[in-house]
Image (cartoon, rainbow, N blue to C red; front, side, top):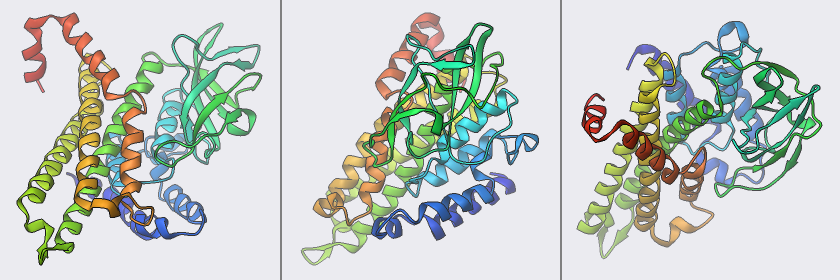
Length: 353
């Protein structure tokens, strides 16, 4: 880890400790905390870390952005930080100036792509993270001249507001009749599949961070909770559970880190990047399911109450498992890649990493 990495991680952690502490937010009477937290993230440049300086961003590299996301995951971040990072990255790839404010990717399906005709959009995107909590959407649209990266103001869209399992806004976005605020031809290699890969890597990284958060919560609680005259951490069954949770956390951190490193060093989103991201999203998703169950088992009934902060982590872990493709979907894609290359290439493919 470089000195720059440490500075970025420390800056991110300090902002969340001061303005986004899970216990403080859990006890807050309203959402008044969101504005100062988001303002601090924007002022520090963390929201646009993946955007070059000349396009209005901080000019950090890919690995820095993933460090930010893992650190934020440890606090069960309840603001669209990952979404804004991803949207800013997509805009910068098309050399578009990045606007101020929160953003989210709004990806249409391959079967029903978003279309731009005569300056007007037609189509929809489903289950968009923070759909009703952002200022802008970024998407890919089919035009008569080919695919284009577009930025559109949220106020110009029809948003079907809903709440995701993590407690954050999530909904369907209808673009029919709306006009983009900015657009540019999509550069080579930038497609919905590319954005899905970046989104999956981001969610795997957030899940790794959240698992680190619940591991810390579970270890602390087991050391404090007394039963039959001694801390429950002294019981072998609890120790076994905590060791298993530590193992799941380590696996998720390693897989997500490998995917981020692969993206950082690759010139394009090639087969190797797909392999790493698919493996990371699959493994982190499995770890999220197992880890959340163990953490709740260690905490017992108190972990299911609104007053305890554990649910802020586990509900987002469950939500992030499905965002940008569930582990089942990515496992199928990974299997298809292995099958296409043939059995003889499986071991070289794994051993080269």
